[in-house]
Length: 131
Image (tube, rainbow, N blue to C red):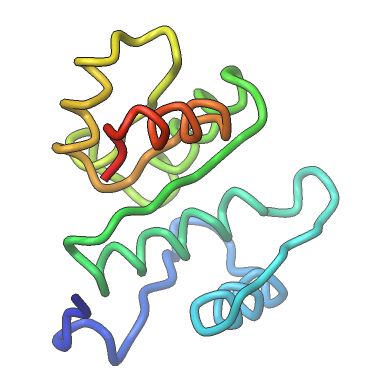
């Protein structure tokens, strides 16, 4: 459910120098389906972190899934997003297939922002533990 108190605005962090193209992409991605294709080092993770942060503000009971193709990239992305926008450890979680099913099920119930591979997401959907 949309939080009416926060949905009229969005937050763009200023802890890094503002790049106009990143701001523009974030603005578009918050209101439209968006595919971001940028060369390495130009801020795809920053853009994703800002979009996820605002979606969590707007939909406090919703879920956000950030998928990366490999476990090392999953680990890298969760740490980067936590550093970039102050994503809390209690609200964000890294899920891997090496975690026992019962532990993943518990994490699905506690956190709201998940970093995982597509395979882990598919497995948890098929197992019925992904809400």
